[in-house]
Length: 148
Image (tube, rainbow, N blue to C red):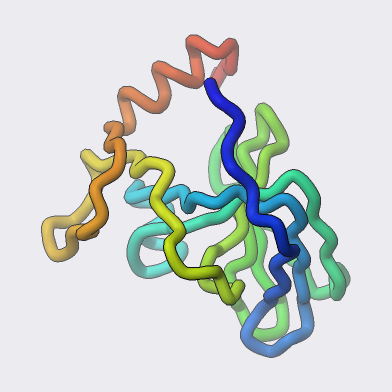
């Protein structure tokens, strides 16, 4: 797997009320998209997240975390309810809701996952790799993650 391109400038963003602010350094220059049923319920549609090598969170006292499955947790602001991030528990990897940040023009989509759960009422115009839930879970298991 090749090393993803990084944005040269830090990204700053936060929740709707401003109580939680997040700064990302060395953010990846592509957005991850998930169409799974849990993400749809969590945000009303697909999840679009951005990953970074460095993060800082101010206002952590307002962050609430919900363990949504055996392998994931989701964070939100306890004051305004804004969704903040998704964490994959086996690796600790977090992606942050892309809409919290003023992202530069021209970002692409890294991939779309759980496309088998995507409702038919929307499609993304940008072409990107698309993987079913079965494919993404098989990749995780092949990488050594256990979901038992």
